[in-house]
Length: 247
Length: 243
Image 1 (cartoon, helix red, strand yellow):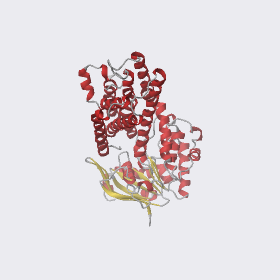
Image 2 (spheres, rainbow over the protein chains, first blue to last red):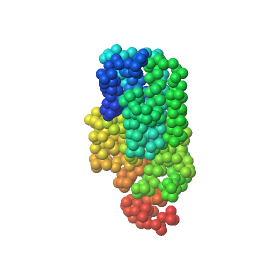
Image 3 (cartoon, rainbow over the protein chains, first blue to last red):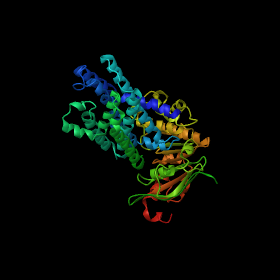
Image 4 (tube, rainbow over the protein chains, first blue to last red):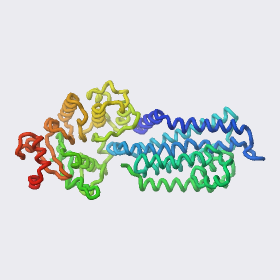
């Protein structure tokens, strides 16, 4: 526990010194949400909808941090620490390289939850936003999306032979998901063809789930995304366990 | 006799290249043992197979009576390791790297005291990246000593150090030896080996071509300098086959 705490504090400091996560996981979601608020004000999501466009977008914007941490931050840090032999160094201590992975996962989880709270606060302060659905359901859904996305990142970082490959794979996953899954550009305003393409991305399904949870839609409607998220998490975790390269 | 480090028949190939062939090694408690050989002779592979960070194709290794893979957690409370390659996070400070390392052990030594002993007291708050090569090297020795180990593995102990720092590090190691520390090191410097090592082993293409004391190495060659003897063992093909 002492080791985890010390390592967690130090790795947090290192991560903040890097600034990228602060910009992409903390600042960016707040800016996007405020922009959406300014553009759409209290317009309903569609004619006759019982909720506003902004309310509908909350679930999507809250995943920006998950996406940044899971498919960009995690793969890069894992492949970097392997390249630098930091994982190997942990093998010749009483701790294990799993410890530093656990610390990294916790840090990205912390970024995600911090971002969630800040986006919510920004919405509440600037345009009186509040969650229609149950907070617990939303948090459970958020956690599920996080686990699912982080498992993708861990797999990419774990099997990429070097940092270049990890970074290329991370970019291929991160940028399309950030733009076309609805996290930044709202899904609802995309042309139907683009929506179809968007639907195959894991994050799109996650966002559908979070939107439903945020708006308090019936649970049944979210069966497909829930199944999708769980399947991805299991698949990626299993593949990571099998193929993870420590060196 | 009880050996602190004991390796038997360690063999490791990378593809068709035999990096280590039937490697046997016994290091007694309180001994300083030196592994010599040119780059690529198999020194690092030998260290890694002994430590269990690389899986040998064949053979066993025991440190302090324990299997380095099965008893990893218990064993590495008592073993310090300094690898040749750099292994630290970007943007980390000396103090942070030391604290993190200390947090991994149950009874760590005070990093500040060790940094002082290795002439790094004023570098506590400095970024590891901003240290000179020699300072980094000393820092890695400090990290290997933080667990207050009974055995220490040092891969290229003084590479990059200036003459003064080398001498200081040697004296530190000799002092630790007096307290019963067992050392397995690799080195390219004959003066260092003569100064420190009770026993040496010379590797060539993964094979052991000599094992014994520095004196014996010289006696078994036609020369009277360790460096000449070293060249004799590592370069002349025919004579080696009989050893």
